[in-house]
Image: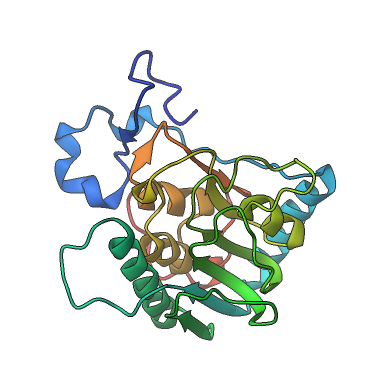
Length: 246
């Protein structure tokens, strides 16, 4: 739907996103310009009650500013090498997201640098989350705050929002109380995900909405990724630092 304004483009592969900040120097070479892109998200879950709760929680959190703690679940220590790619790049980005959160907010930040994920009871008052990798096996480690935002980097975590018994992360996080999440409907490859440091950095800025933060941080359109949540949600709107031209 993001490319609905375009009559013809290849449906076989991803398309570069002109809003992605990493492509700004290449903007003239991209097949689409910003006027050809629609910002879209979904309000969906395993029940209508959860969808209504997502909307209510977003409005409530926005009115008083999202509070709680931030949890970032990397697998390795921050690398010494530069020019990272693939898993190493995204693991390093989780580290950077933790640093950015500490710089832009007063939220206590918890960074796990071990392969073992956060486990039950490890993440009380969870307001922000990003981590990996537990494929199709949600780990109920979180006590989600009203208005919480987070996503798990793993394949196919949004293949269903309604199948009974499914343990994919998007479905289960929404059922447990998160207000906004991101996930793929198939194999996106790791580079299909928004870069954590960018997504949370824009969200924490206070000026950008949820959907703007997503589109500024995700490299590809017409692909496997879905944003779920109120597109106009600004969980840190009361701490606006700057107004930047999209």
